[in-house]
Image (cartoon, rainbow, N blue to C red; front, side, top):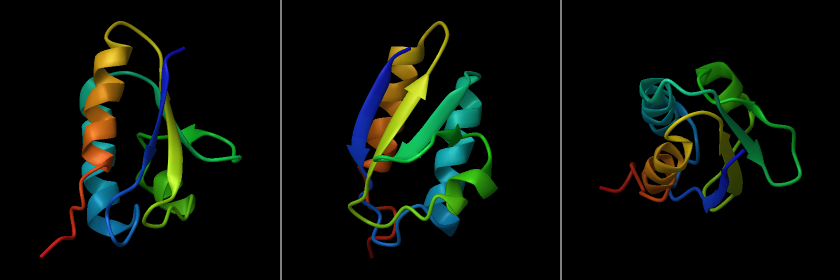
Length: 89
């Protein structure tokens, strides 16, 4: 199963707007994707409640994993999304 590590760039971490954008992008892939904080258990990245429940802060590193056709491309896209500060003025 392909996976990627990325530091979350949004200054509020994965809360509210950035989490919503991320979950929408994950859902659009049509693939089962998980997200985990370093050292933590993975959760379903298609669930806004699970993603926000991780308590990911700015600059926290997370691991994304996906399974299925196109998983590598989907993960690359999702890493790019998390590497952007969506709360920049």
